[in-house]
Length: 234
Image (tube, rainbow, N blue to C red):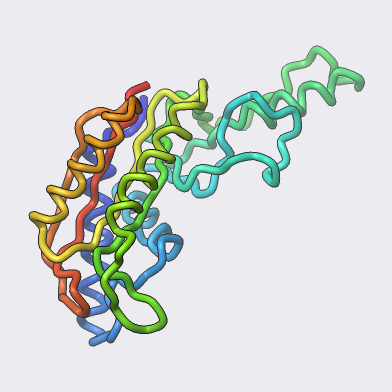
């Protein structure tokens, strides 16, 4: 069974707000909204892990369209969340590759799955998440400036990730996580909803978003932080 979106949303927003409070206590000149998208990944991952779920970062998409399991040529997903933190995530491309190699050895026809007792999670039982971080006031070169690409980043960034997740036939549970920094919580609610409406309007398979937001210390125009989970209808 895949983790619930509610549990992931709660863990993610809590972790981000905790990190924001930590920066406030340190009297840092840079807030959580100054972190790059990739810098936010470990913060979110740690929060999800501490909530009791399993987490795998930068995992290859499980589609069997590739013959070679090399990570160089395969698309990777930001986060994959498992209900059981002790489980390993099965890579069907890697397994098929190993099985093919074994056909010409003494192990041909033998089930290569090791009996270690470690739980194994199929791709279709995990929750696949792509993360997008977008700020109304961007932190660039040490200063905050209005992000004139804000609306475009919201619509195109969300839509491209929805399409990517929906195109993999082995993924059954997926969502895009928008981490938004804006002037107010009302702005986050409005803009997150509008971005999803745009995606739906161009025919992408999405369901209603789940949104949590909270005020943060305003260092350069962003007075609120929000997490918008956009379920992909698979």
